[in-house]
Structure formats: structure tokens, C-alpha cells
Length: 160
View 1: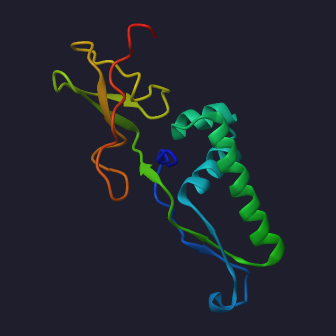
View 2: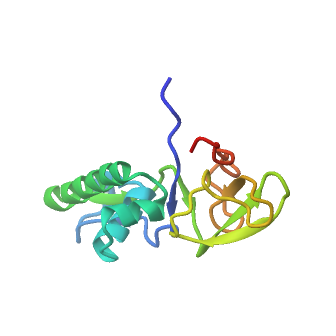
């Protein structure tokens, strides 16, 4: 059985759901669907002009995963533009992120914030009060679609 997909942190919901060629009704067009995390990857790489490694940190994925996301997003946008298809933006496996992320210590219950895109990962976060492991929610009370807080990896092992 494959490993479950890790949700990607995105800055916000898209402002628009469709883009289409002018003068042709949407019902007459074939639609290419772009996921919300693919749109976020386009924003980070092409608008903010971040290196893939920095953009991957913001989305809390590995650099190779970010590369796969951005490659598929570029392919879909090119297909829509070249072949005159509508571009729909919806769905995906993502978490809405605010300017800060809230961490909660699993040992003492202390909560603290880390800036979004700081590179601190949930499984590496250490409670500033007691040094315990953390559980993380991305943003303030905005959880992944259909789920609550993501699981935590626990405190780092002594051998790490």
C-alpha cells in the first residue's frame, strides 16, 4: 500500500476558479484542471521568483516533490493555452497557511508560533518551554480539508 500523500501548505484559496479563451462559452470548452497546490507552486516559482528549494520549504515538501508539482502545473497551463482549453482551478491535498504556524507541545501543552516559510518542520520543532516534541497546525485554526491537525513525528531521537 502506498504512503499517504503529505498535504502542501498554500497561502490562500484561489481568487478565481476558471480561465478560458475569450468569446467561447465555457460549456463548449474542454477543461484542464489545475490543483490549488499547483497554482501555489506557480505563484512561488514564477511570480515570487523563489528557487525551488526555497519554494519547497514554504510549501513544506521536498525539493524533488516541488519540482514534480511545478512541472505538472507548467504542462497543464501550456496545454490550456496552446490547445485553447479552459483552465479550472480546484481541489488537491493542501492546508491553508497564515503568516504564522501554531505549534503545540505534546508533553506540556504549551503553544507557540513560527513564521510561515521559516523552514521549521513539525517533526523537528522543539518546545521552547520544556524541550518536548510538537504537534503542528498550519495557520490559525485552518485545518486540512476533511481532517484536523496533522500527526506529529515526535521529538528527535538521541541518535539524530
